[in-house]
Image (cartoon, rainbow, N blue to C red):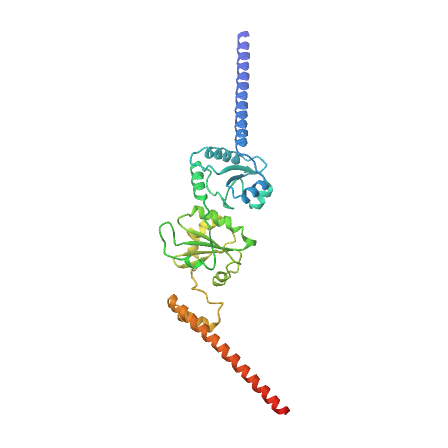
Length: 326
């Protein structure tokens, strides 16, 4: 009986000791993980809204991880991945990786979910919209390094719809915007990075391009048009996200009735001159210049003739008045 009690006591002590050892091991692992997270946090420095604005003004490159103040396990994972790609030889040397919990910056960039990764370059930014994978991130950084969206206006837009060449597809996604709705530009830029080589992306300032605004009957802000194979489709969804634009360009535009792209707009000219230009718009440049000179000469001669006739009439009236007085 004594031996049996001793065996039970020794078994209990062994179990308690094993439990303590397991607890100590788990605590050690947690401490090591916390130290690793702390070390990662020290490597990737924090910035605030002012630092972002300064980097923007100085045209610096930043890769910014935005995360909340409360605990975010996914954010911790992304921080580790960013530390890995920072040490990758293919990662740009002039690109700094930083992180921020600034509520001002979150509001300014209209961040809707965490973690969010923003690439600032060329005084514009683009959002990462993929899985947080090392290889995908490196490829995305490579594509997003240069600015994708082209600026178009009244003078440059006519070259937009042209035959595709190597590396220059004929499909275009164009955002018409003004200052009040320029938040659409990062969305379009984000879309453009993923569709690089498949769809060209452009922006048109409504105030700077009144002829284009009139030509395409732009009434909303922003207005997004998709040009594909000589036809035009209007984006009608109220959701302005890169994923919704991808869905629109991939398939949902097929549910819309295509519109013919308007020809060169003559809406600002008088109707009789409009008909004249349309009728002879096939002439070459030298003929058009000669015709223009002839028209201007005729107008000037007519003006001189009218002025001469008016002055002659006024002189006759003066002579008649003086004769009556006499």
